[in-house]
Length: 54
Image (tube, rainbow, N blue to C red; front, side, top):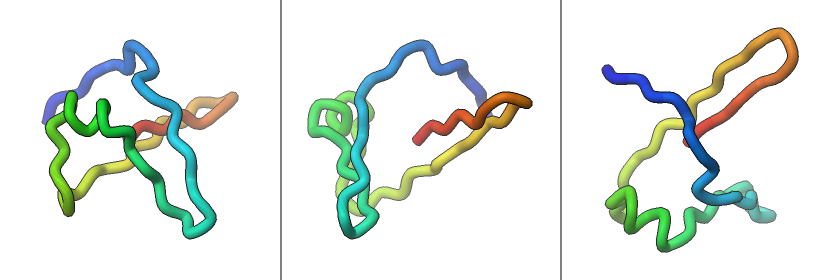
């Protein structure tokens, strides 16, 4: 498995009242994400804070 560094923020995501996250259309198109595909949420922790990526 390859790893990469986060180089920039592509989008700010919002969790709705049902706990769901909507990925903006332009981001889905750039990443070629299709309906019903599964994504992985990853977290990295250091002594000061947690960092999350989808």
